[in-house]
Each structure stands twice: as structure tokens, then as C-alpha cells.
Image (cartoon, rainbow, N blue to C red):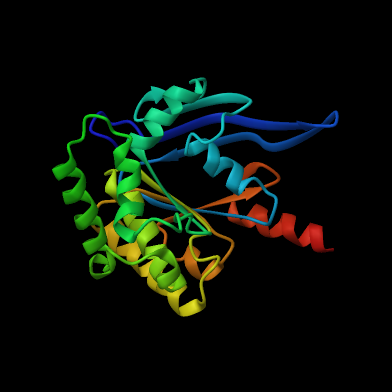
Length: 241
């Protein structure tokens, strides 16, 4: 919980409908979700159940069709693009499956880039944050390297450092181990656990049951709704029957 006793993330009756060629696709159908400050939550469920759509809305990359969404006690469901961008840059750190590093920027420059959009942050403060973040993920010795000179596991560590540099309220990880072998995947999960122990709030989407166990709490999605674990098992059995 935040200092004011509010959840960091509070979602009520959230819906998301995509319209294509007069076809309605209901990606989210009345989601209720609360995430407290300092929590580590995993969102799981079968492919196409709405996991990434929900994470995109939590990360202010997309807007819901209906429902309420509060971040740090402030309603954010109806903000325009510019307002969403400003809050996203300040409050949210992203870790993507595909790393999303820029190939012609060095490790240092990749981590610094989001901070350059904070107009009032002086250069010495940016440098301090970049180096602190890279040290936390064990990549400070690679500041002058380019992404192509790094392994997949190292690239994901740099991506985590980039997410940490802005001191976000919450880290959002979308299948952070999806492009890694099992050893590097475990190493990235251990890194996220360490960050959580240090106080980070983390919301992770994963389909891998091995990595769900790293989280404090698991949220199951099925057909755009949050369901209890027992209900999910029954629904999955019905699908495969």
C-alpha cells in the first residue's frame, strides 16, 4: 500500500474491446485488480486470455474501453496521449520479452535514453542514475558495449537497468524470460527477486509455471476475466475435453 493507505494500482470493471472489420473482440471483460506498493504479482493464463492487453493498460500504453483505473490514487483511464506519456516516463518501468534495446546506442546510452525526456533532470543526476542502475544488475563493466556484443541474458539485464533508472513506482515485465534459455531465464528471475526484496513493486506476465513461483501472488486470467485457480483448472479441462 502507498503512504495514504491506497493500493498503488486499483482497477475496477475494466473492459477492452477491439474492433476490426465489424468484429468485436472482447480482450478484457470486467477485470478487478489491486496491487499494493512493494508487491510482486504474476499474471498468468492461456495464450490469448488478455494478459498482455491488461499489462499494456496498466503501463499506460493503451486505454481501456470502460471501467476505472487509478495509479497512486489518481484516475488515469481517460488521460490523453501526452499525459499518459508523462506519467509513464515518471512512474513505470518496462521490461519486454524482446529487450527493445536500440542497436546503435551503447549500453550506457540505452539506459540513459528515457531519462533524457525528463527536461529538468541535470546531466550529473542522469549519469548517477545510469551507473547505479547498471551496478544493480551487474552490467556496469559493459557501459561502452553495444547490444550486439552482449548475450541475451546480458541484454535483458541492461533492459532491467533501463527500467530502474527512472526510479519507477512499478516495474512491468512482459514475458521477461521468453527469449532466454533456462539458465539466463533463472538469472533474470533471481534479479527481479532481489529487486523485490529491495522494495520494488513488480507486475509480471508469464506463461511459465516455474517463474510464477517467484511472485508473492498469482492472478489467473481466462477469457479476459480474473478467475480463481480452481476455476481456471476446470475451465482449462473443459477446453481440452
